[in-house]
Length: 131
Image (cartoon, rainbow, N blue to C red; front, side, top):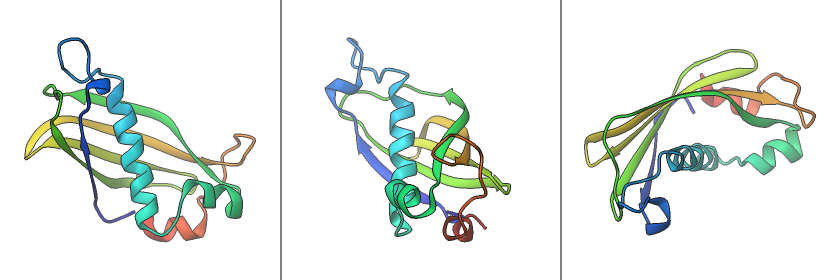
């Protein structure tokens, strides 16, 4: 995942509040989808990481800044890149834009854990993409 990833979404009515503005918590769902798509683009999946490597990727923390509102029927681009990584975790920067206009930006700290929730070394198959 060391390279940059792009995922596009469209805002549906269900994503918005009564004023047609995206409900703030839905941005977290959009970011999660973009991270999953980044993993899929590498030929991996969260299910494969669990089944074959006994590893889950979980969110330890997320710091998100809302810059402008997204609205019903907007088409948004989510850009994801790796900022840094350690033996068991990595930090991803995710930016949501409408055309080239910043909508929000998040710094997400992700940790690899075993099925019991104990931190483990990032699987080699994933680590090679983080460098």
